[in-house]
View 1 (cartoon, rainbow, N blue to C red):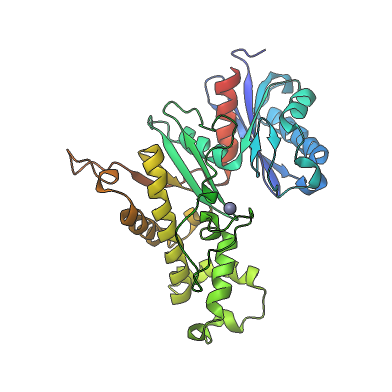
View 2: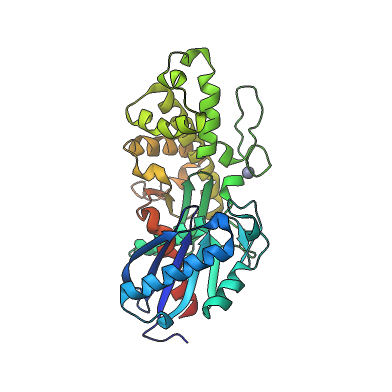
Length: 339
Ligand SMILES: [Zn+2]
């Protein structure tokens, strides 16, 4: 039973680690952020054992009994509905189709809310902006492209079946040099994620490096696989390398262009850009490219108020929660739902 001495745990299952955090009934963080290996490739049972370990560490870090944890918010790096992962999960085989939420709730004896990592990060960004009372749209380019939307007051909007905000897979009107639509990892073609993600970066880089123009580029003489070259691209962009800048500029523009349609649907007032780019030294440039794409597609009213031109109607900000955002978001959500 929840009470004033209850705590709520946020558990963020990533590909390599589980991040975990506690909040109390007043939404104050209890104890430090905890991190354990996720073992997701070994299946959900192995991961559950890691979650137990994380909960033990949270309880001892906050100097409370584990039984004081009255609810859990859990996020997974895969699309899910009703506590069940249904999409091509980047996890071990037994995850898909299993009632993860139900099994974890039975194991821990407390209610569990489960969602995907994009929704969780959006909730975390909202929770960390305590003065923000409007809504918030998060778009986070990473290996794929995640998104999340939080309603005024802090409740996440996940749709009727938990399947909303799959923003990485909306279609965009951009074509490759050969006029074809790029294939997406989801099986469709022309998805936004096929342009704005680490996977997209690898494809673009491979295509560009095969062009005459870049024969002399240092990445062309490097003997490493294109996956590793794509990781290096960020360093090149930080130094102003023309190829890297061109690729990120295109990516930022397409992202902003697509955000204009998301804003047209949700009018969030605040758009937060998450993912690893928030930590790069060229992020101000990247934000300009996003703004250029946004301006190309958004009506003026989505940028400035028609009554007061000083008033910006859609603010853009970088994420502030870093790696901890999703765990924080889930702890706040567990408190909101189970208090
Ligand atoms: Zn797709």
